[in-house]
Each structure stands twice: as structure tokens, then as C-alpha cells.
Length: 396
Image (spheres, rainbow, N blue to C red):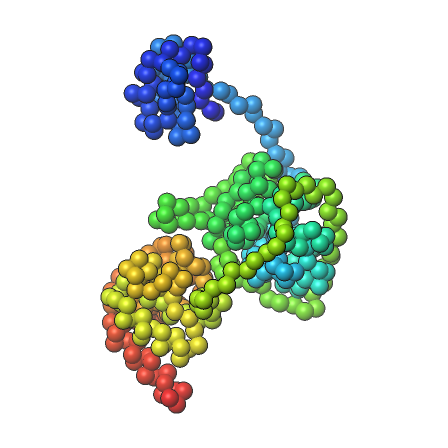
């Protein structure tokens, strides 16, 4: 309910300025004006001697009939006509949710071929809503948001998932706004409340200091964007069949047009999100020299070097190596954490790894709570022993 000022009644007495805890009131032309910092705490209402400050009652919306919505949808992002890996990860999560709800799992694919649609079926989709219109080959907010919103209004899925990628973060909020439903961004875990069928959407909050579980109980669909490399892919079945529904792109209004796409050229060779083995270091290394040791171990394992935010903030290693909430989310087969205590911000970015090996001299370090194998010891003693043993096994 927004707060407004009746300018005809306001005398500019400034009584409201003294009680506002958020500095949300300004005086302009001898009249009070509510600014964008207003938190609607209502502290200003009773102190106005003229009764010039009021709250506006918004009209109540018609409640959503939840029974009209059924099915789990995954938006399958594509780049240059090829489905992005995050779509297959979302299908793994979507398959689990759909099975729990005893409903269908569908994928939505814009601007790609029927061949790519069939790949989505083999990775777990029951149906694929495919629009091959060439105008959708390159991502553009408005037509993507318009078409997806139209499909959702027509077929009424109860859950819609998308990747928390630059594309997903750009247009999925537009979709949620068009549908007047909730959106939980940057989720790291998804589950179903068996009693209410509500989607339990888990994401870091307050700088990663807590993990919040968010629900959208009164509106549908429930929309969530999910971090790449957090969810596990489903099993690939080359014999799996499903239904492809061809969608026509009609009236795709757009105020912009993609003229050219320029790919960024980077000299950084680190590709943490694709690495099968990651050796990461934290504050426990004590300095940049420790990362030279980790680079040797990673090289022997044909892996990549990662780092906690603490190590990056100290300037020991570039930001491109950072794993965690404010860095990259990874899901390697083996993650070796060296001198990393295991703050929740870091765990969010790597806890879905297949095998986690933790090396820390503090036996109470939180990293051991998620580790598959834990080694209590000094990294400068343990890691050289690992390097020596691997070299012996490789005959080096």
C-alpha cells in the first residue's frame, strides 16, 4: 500500500521529516514528497497535523485458481542454435520435481532446430514446445518474454524453471511481471512440499549468511531461476521418445533489433565450470606461494585451480578463479579444498561436487561437514605428499 501526500493539505511544517527513520521524505516547493526510500512503516501518518499523509489501498487481485495449473516447464536456453548445458541440468531437477508431483516435464525452446528439441527429450523432457522462427535465434528480451508469457497463459504450467544466466536473469523477471506471479532468483536447491504442492525455492540471502526457503503459495506459475552447475543432469536415453509441439511466433513486438553479436575474447584460460577436477585454496594457504603448489597438483590431475573469496580479496590469485556465491558455481567430479574453512558463501558454489576432499588443520572447520573425505593436517605437508605420490603413480 503506497504512501502519498495530499499537496492541498500539506503546509510544509516538516513534522514528518523528524519521525521518518529512512530519510524517505523531502520538502520541495514547501510540500512534503515521498521518495524511493519509503519502507511504508507508517510512522509519518499519525504525526501530520493536517492529515495530509495517507496510505492508498490497492485493489485486491482475483486469486489464482491453483487447480488450473499443472506440469513442470524448463526454459531451454540456446546459443548459436545449440542448447546450453544449463538446460540439461534443469531437466534433471525438473524430472525429479515432475515425478514427485506425478505430472509431465516439458521444455520450451526458441530459435533452435528439431534436432536440438529431440536432445531435450533424450535428457528427460516429455514434451518440447519448439519455435524455430529465425527471429528468435539471437536472444532479445521483448520477443522472448512475450512468447513465453503467451505459452504459459495458454498451457498453464505450475512450475517454470530457467537458468540464472545473463539471458535468464534478463528476461525471466519480465515474464513474472507480465503474469503477476512470484519469482525466486538464483536458487541453489528446489524441493516440493508434499502437502501443498508448493515449490520450496532455496537461495542464499543476506550476503550468503543464511539460506532462505521461499514459497509462492497464492499465484501460479511458480517461477525460479537456478544457478548453473548446481543441479545434476538426468541419465541420457538415446531411445527415449516424446512429443514436439511446434509453436508459431505471432505478433512478436520488439522495440530493438539484434544487428550483430560480438563475442568477448578473453586471455583467461581458466574454465572452472567445465573442469572435472578442481583444486582450490583459501586463507589457510597464508599467501600466494601456496597457489603455485596447488597449480602443480591441478596440473598432475588435469584439473583447474580455484579459490575462496578470502584468497582473492587478499590478491593472491585473480578473481576468475573464485568459487562461491560471488564467484563461479562449479560441479566437478572431484573438488579438493585446501586451507578453506567452509563459509556458507563458498559452500553454495561447490557443495554439489561429486567428491569433496577437504584438507584443513582445524578439525572443527565447517568444510568437513560437506566433505566426502577429510584430512586434518597442514596443507604444506599434505599437498606435497599427494604430489609426490601422484608423480610416482604416473612414473614422473
